[in-house]
Length: 237
Image (cartoon, rainbow, N blue to C red; front, side, top):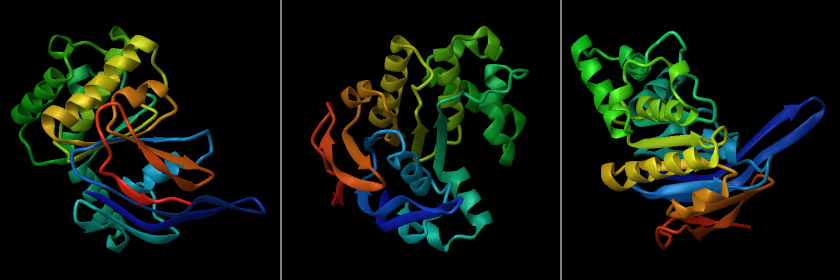
């Protein structure tokens, strides 16, 4: 599903050259739940952005779902993300004047679906995340955990192959963090999604198939999560 070959990302910060990623090679098969872990500034978010098509590598090749992302124009890359990727972030980014259902519907406004089908799909996504009874509630009427579940429903409403999350439990208490991690595991187990998150949360290891370790921009190897042995392959220094 995801393949990186000798991927590096460099950029300038003032007078300094920053090596955010250096020569990373790895493969993530379809239907896996993987966590990118490492200290702050290790490059895990940069790596997540690379494989999600949110940023381009300075060197190397990235293939996702059979497409070489390096070969895509900006418009093609945006269309690819819309068709294949669902995004979940630390902050829920819900529109406060929209109901939960209306927030979930937002990605569908870019499609040719009729209003009735958009509404049905949004309600289905909310049912999957356990919020069928909260569709009409505004974000301010929802707990932090519920808001993140709305954000996950929004991420999956287009039925993407891959769900990526940048610190999806970073703004949640322990109970809600566990619920969100369990929900992400359910997306993998019951719906066959490939799920990749960047996280500091040690609880994630109990839910993922594999932990990929990143430090100072270098892929340091992997270890199995609690849910099974690793089919993730890669090279580490």
